[in-house]
Image (tube, rainbow, N blue to C red; front, side):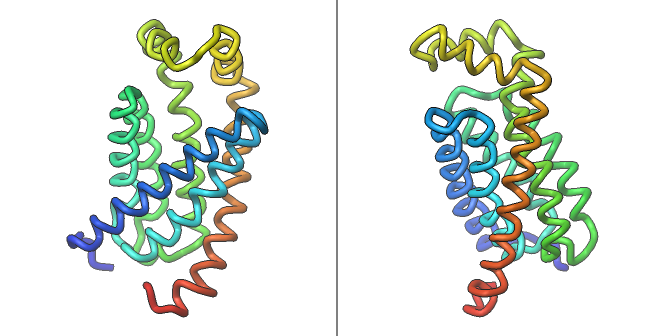
Length: 195
């Protein structure tokens, strides 16, 4: 595996990260209708196939880390700068899982790496509540129309059992998305010689 990134690799990374960001936002919007736990499954399910295809196409170390930086920048633009810290920490774990040559084309390792990456998406909402509570609550207050909706969100992101349940649901979504992504890779993407 060559590890020198090309311009095409960075373009692929940017495009796929925009799509994954949209997938995460769609998943987040479903929490209004389906609840926070189901939205974690949907987010993982929608984002994972794109990560698997991107990682296979780029096939270089740094896919998870650079994706974390992209997502961190997207979230910083939305006013959630704190998220980048947790994204980077968990993406380093994902990178270590996929460090060996050929790992970015191994669906099992990629799915395990994506589990950590997706858990960072869940914990990004938890981390600032414990580390920067007052500043984060001020930022959140402008995003929620009623105190009830803010309290509802805080229930999930401050209650240890709910945090664990959201992480578990994210894992379920990633595993299902991993099967879908691997199937797409083998049945369509590789046959069409896009990788």
